[in-house]
Amino acid sequence: MAIVNMRQMLQEAKAGRYAVGAFNILDYNSMRAVVDAAAELKAPVIIQTSVKTVVFWGYEPIIQWYRQLADAVSVPVAIHLDHCKDLDVIRQCIAHGWTSVMIDASSKPFEENLTLTQQAAEMATPKDITVEAEMGAIVGVEDDIHVREQDAHLADPDEAQRFCEAVSLDCFAPAIGTAHGVYKGEPVIAFDRIETIARRTGLPLALHGGTGLSDEVFRRCIALGCAKVNISTQLKYAHIDGFVDYHTGHSTQYDPLKVLAAQYERLREGIARDIQLFGSAGKV
Ligand code: 13P
Image (cartoon, rainbow, N blue to C red; front, side, top):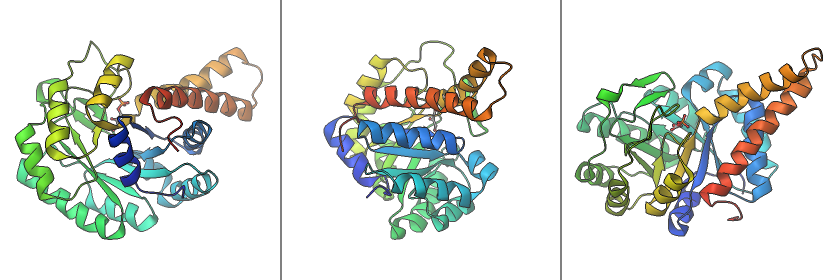
């Protein structure tokens, strides 16, 4: 039960007008914090791995952590490869047991984005691996993919519909004004596009750039059709601040397990807050 792809959890979230949190993990401690928070709150959840994290640890350790943690709980837990431009990495993740993948060819022209997305879907769909694709350019840095503000552009609803009719997807990530990383000012969200694209594609939408959005923005985006919310930067901060703050307060202690416990707690608290805010608590 616990090891699943994203399909059913996102369909249910879309129908129920709540969102499933997709959290970019960094290591075993952060993956454990995601799974424990979801299990405690009886929420479906998505463990997300950036390509950088996969390269750092290797496929096998990550999938072993996932199997061990997800097997031990009764809530559905998917493992999803975030923003991947490389079909070989997607192939490897599928071979190693990832249950979901994102192909990000959004920097390419429409036809090329579509062709690469179709190739990813041809690898994934027969194995019951779910697929997310992106359109438009989401500003900021995610996994060493830099998009400058002047290069950002929103997804066009006509193109989004045409794209999603031409390839079988489980989740669609249109650029709608959010950004990866820390927001410098108030983001301008194209709420009307979320509603139009959700209606015209019929797909659960992914809201990228979750860190730093206000509760009100989350609620509106989710109500309009965002059924998956991506959170990465928040975990990076909690990972480092949880560690540093504990060590600063106990500078002579040098007990790594206590530091890691504090880091885990900081991560878990933030993730639990998000799950409650997104409305997925108690849905299992
Ligand atoms: P943040 O780093 O802004 O939370 O964005 C996460 C994201 O969208 C990952 O794909």
